[in-house]
Amino acid sequence: MMNNELAIEGLLKIAKVGQSFEKAGVKGYSNIWRDSVYFYWEQWKIPKFSKMRIHSKNASSLLNRDRNHNPGGCVYEHAIPFSCLRKKLGFKIIDENNIHRYLTYIIGVNITKNENIDLNNVKCGQNMPTNWDEKDLFARYKEAKIELVFPVDWKTTYGLSYLSQQGVGKI
Image (cartoon, rainbow, N blue to C red):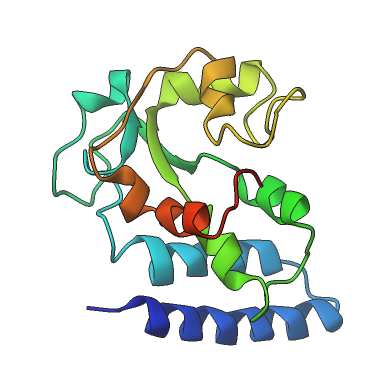
């Protein structure tokens, strides 16, 4: 099993490759980064389509506790979309100086396909609400009236306890 140190080391290597791609004019750094974060950071901690992840009340009946395949009808996404997170944290490229803060905010959420449409309908598919206070990490779901279910240990699982220890109250 991978640990945080190995995962971060691997992600930093990938970030450097992505930077060289961008310097060469090759598009796609965002996709490389998103997929790498999933495989190096998210997947080994909690199965993707598991009830152990934060999920909507409507998705609850579709998910199993320990399974890592889509039961159908579910969408895996992030509480704060990657593009918003990078913009809010004020950097385009991930490096040694900002990777810990970035990864702390990577929070996978399972919702239904219909709820994903609801997010898009309120213009929160790839954006946070326009009135976002930068404190409520789940504001998109509130805006779309999607009720979430939180596992008991979600704060420690997602690294948010680290943020609170550092005194970070908002993004």
